[in-house]
Amino acid sequence: MKKLWILGALGLSMAAQAHDLWVSAPVRLDSGSTLKADLGYSHDFPNVEKIADDRVHIFKPLQLTDKSGKTVDLTNKGENYQYVSKFRLKDGSYWVGAVYKPTFWSQNSEGWKQKTLKDLPGATYCEQAQMFGKAFLQVGSAGVDESVLTRPVGHELELVPLKNPNEVKVGGLLPVKVLYKGKPLAKATVTASSDTLAEMDLAATHDHREPQGFSGKTDKDGVVNVIPLIEGLWKIKAVHQADYADKSVCQEDKSYATLIMPVGTKRAAERHEHHHQH
Image (cartoon, rainbow, N blue to C red; front, top):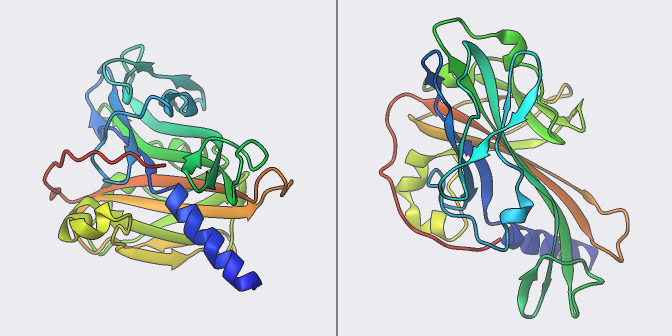
């Protein structure tokens, strides 16, 4: 019976979080440019869409982290997923980050609500979800600052590349370290998909079964080599699940993290399809 409950909970959990969070940003900008970036939140990667009104409060503004480790918020301008920097960027390496704040999602016979088990009558399952996304940005002609590239920005669950994710070629290796609360996460499953792969089976993608082009587990140091086998815009993903401290409030505590890796020049055709689920 216990196994059945666990499988049921995992199924519900996947239904609760059909959307992924990622950062859509340029790979490189000229010196003195203003950054324009999008907060991606959908199940139709890499296509961004307007965030549902009842979810806008969940997200922090997109954030920019520079070589000093200082993180500043970008400014929302345009649709609620579109952001710009408050100043022109100096030469150097940066991280653009997205954060979906810890949020309770519970399910009853009527669907999913942003409530705990105690707050939603008839609730059978609850998870507290939080999400994080990152993309690496180089400004100007200077070389990549390795200290910025390999330094965590401080997300609770974080994918830290050990070389530049913007320069990986088809069949190459991108070593990635998975950190949870700042510590290496061993035996964590890391998956990756690309826009070009999803395009091959759009029916599966739209049915919340996005095709995966890579799956591997981290070693004792929390490191896994991600191998992209086709060109495209790749989304590397890790998920960490733990028991929620008070089971009368919620059952699971789940964290999701993504890292963007552009490989080659081929990209999927742009799609405009909107499906609002959790």
